[in-house]
Image (tube, rainbow, N blue to C red; front, top):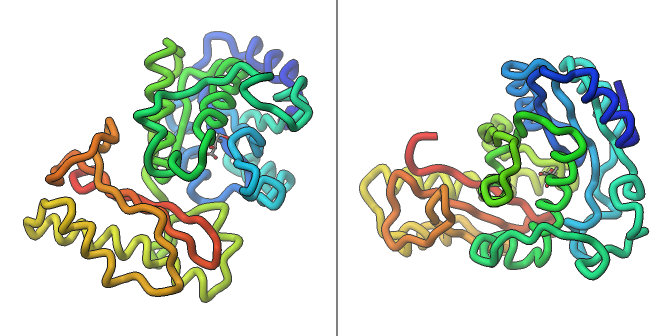
Length: 285
Ligand code: PAF
């Protein structure tokens, strides 16, 4: 079933009282990465809801909100094939009736995650991004009232921040993190890969190569974070515009001078102007 309004979702939710509900929040343009979240949700829940909403308030003014791929018919077809029970695809005015596209924290109650978690990695350049993410995710949780919410490890900072929000605000939703899905080449799946040319896709392999190489160096016994980060430079050419490469604690995003089994390596790099992110755990997944 496809629902466009909050009332339709609430009605279904009422029907499903007592059942275990899973929510997979997405911005559409579904790929195998999203399908892996849906499959996991199907495994452990009685009913699965997928939301498809390109959330305007998590995009900065110079970001790709307008050109972000919108493929609802195809997304709905994929969800139906996977046995999703409800696809919730609201309009921006359904989610933000007052803002009319001009929302700010002067006009909307925002969820603002703590500075420590947002003042690094993607949050450093995407100012306000995680306020927008947390606000929409909390709204979706309130609308759907799931027992479990499913998110991909590819957006590692996002998952850590959402877990923190849920803890801090006593939101009764368990966050389930699912592993990164990659093409055979190693490229992490992302809706933004659609913007890359064939040549760009090859250049984009630099992200996973840098991460795998750091993990290999760590496995050989190198733990000095500065030395591990230094190894990336051998992979970069003028086709790659690296935004960050960090080795942090995988649960708290704290900086470390020595990498250990709880470290995560995170990278953001532009290829053909497309901003791509990826990460890898140095210890067991
Ligand atoms: O990861 C995403 O696709 C989005 O940030 C999310 C969680 C659906 C919120 O809009």
